[in-house]
Image (cartoon, rainbow, N blue to C red; front, side, top):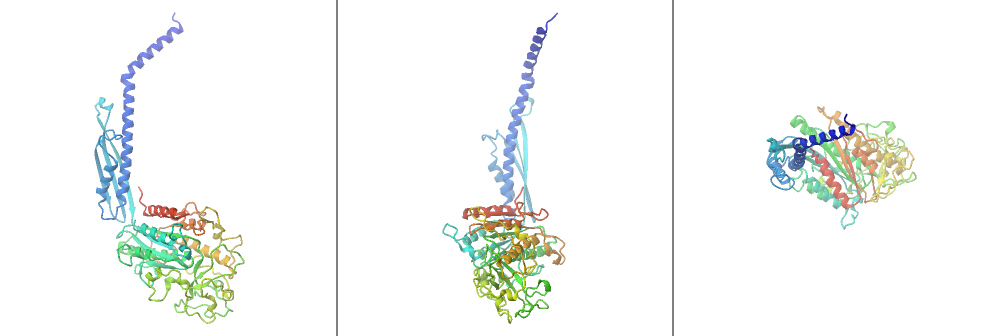
Length: 547
């Protein structure tokens, strides 16, 4: 009878025999196949990276006169060194296929194959294997209005011997040059106390939004003439307040003009619509229409018992329209402060024929030098301050309340201002707009309450723009415009309100982020270097070159 020990020894011997037989027939082939597979994986990863780079590199030239197909092949060959180079395992016979599709949405599709010599699989009659990779880059033609803050604080030093406005002019020009003239459509709005369209340069400015409206972003923004967008940006000078809501709304009007023109010309419009906002501060001005015939008695600003005539005109009458921008000092505000500045000339509606768009670029702050209308009505003189440092002590006797809407219908009421969050360049949180006292529209002699209303006007303007609220007034247009807003806030001049600007951009980090509207992006910049980087980042985002 065999013992248990004998049986165990016999099994061990059998296992050793089987293992010996498996080494040449199973284990070595499996190991060899594993080595070949790893090698193919490495080559395929390198090929994928090269194809990605080729698609991106060629994609940046879509819409230009460059041969995107040829350039994609050059990128591919430069990044994938077929042959005997280390790391490419002797791969050879690189075959690229590049397909370029033009139109409003342009694509470049890059496919490539390469043959890779195998090591162990050739034993089984497979000397090579072919790996493949593909990538597609898409670029939609852009329509962008640049909205640039040129308030007085922009004249401060950037710490390197220049000024913030000079930096922003240079960075904005560089940004513009990343777009494709003849294909993309660009426009320019600048703002201090009020906003004005800097490009296109047509004056007087047209507030309508039809296909026949003059102005609107166009594709000749970089044609080399003295009035092109680059020259208009170069001419920007800073001064006065910060009327952010009106500037955003002017940009919205300009976008609609171009949208309607393309819609009529092509039957559809699928461009990317964007507003790029730069600011170095917080809003301190808004546009009001004092005797708007659409106002109800409950919302009329002018006192019925006050000395100011023409409390309300019956129809909109340019000759008697009290349409102006209203200024207050910048924050921090206190509920006891009385320093309202008054009503001033709107740059966009300036009646002077000599004040061209070129003139307005070079005259930042001049909108604060003249009241509007230039000849005030009987008894209304004290609505207008002589300059932006005077106290308007008679203002409470003329105005009964802060209105519920600005000139463009943006809402001034509500508690949106509680999301204010002002951050300085060192990261410290500064005084916010609100001290906890809620907005009281009857406090017309308190900068604090005007400040809350102005904050709300900007917040409302951005929300209404993204919702394309004016589509119902664009005759024949059944297509909602998808409008994204992007914002850079320079914190070096006392801080910017990132709570507000995140909401303006509908940044995903914003309080109240609305996923049903277009998502934008907010970037804070603490100094000159960060500002340059922010402009570069925004250029990459807005150009929307994605795979």
